[in-house]
Length: 410
Image 1 (cartoon, rainbow, N blue to C red):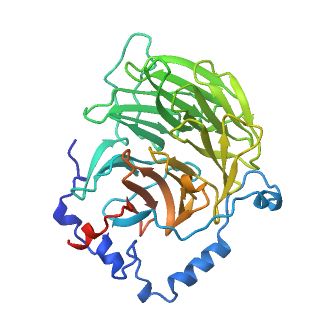
Image 2: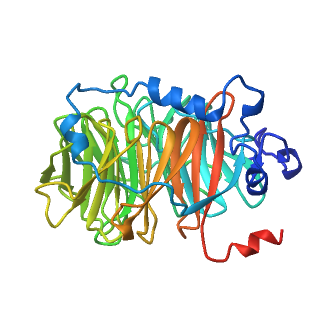
Image 3: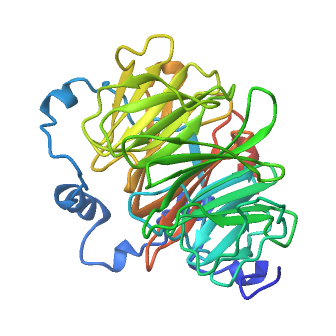
């Protein structure tokens, strides 16, 4: 749909954008004019690290936890800065939910800007509104017995994009499913009738049978399962606490269930039966990701750590990775399994080399709340959404290869 958010390339060539060349020549990647401020970037960073208050739900001693953390060599450079646009700004609806950036190719990324679900083309340097969720949304698919119903003024709390399907969750328990190339929304509903039963997490995955499924997790302690073709309701599983995050294993057999408990769970996707509890975190968890080999699960927690679990031996975590100042709000593996991206609520995205045993790390240092992170399916690009009133933007990084000379001829 055409809208006011359809920007032409000529309009995007503003001083607010930063290219790789400008960054190499000394411009701040976010366009922050440090030279005209009363303090240096370094001094501001020191102050931020000193005074940042991480949100905790459970107040437990962290001394023993930090002793378990892996010693990591920082300063590596796996992904080079490519472009930052402030023409489009990422926004977040809930401070604990940061899965609002998804790339479907190295040139195509989807994210939220207030009530607009946006598409950004890094090739054309152009943004376009895909869906306006402030307006009433009437689903096109209304089979007999379907849960489908109209929704409006949805505050998008979480989303996922896979192939041609966008699935988004809302603050009042909404679920919205839309095909990228179709103008209308195929399916939408309210999963719960209670107030503030936020849809915290959504996932799209292939069941062991090969069928495409949609899974949604809510504050009402329930995980619901839908067919992704006709959006028929298939099943629901209830747990003892609000479910903040779900992620299904590459083979579609297991789902990681994380929420308002220090314990994380592994459950069967078909029955919801808990197979194993994962113990070690000290606070509530809000992020997880599976290595594409299906053997390693990463879980992110408000205790400022990410734990790596080998599903062949779940008695204790394999490794513990530490953030700089805040909860681990988003986790992503590259599709080839080479890198793990770990995002804090603000300022830092850490990239770990899995082939080096996670001991080598690139630290992306920026300023602002992080709305989401996403690698492109081909691993060539990494996008970071920054939610900030002034410097809100979309950052793009490109995988460093051994043919960087190509860039120098432009």
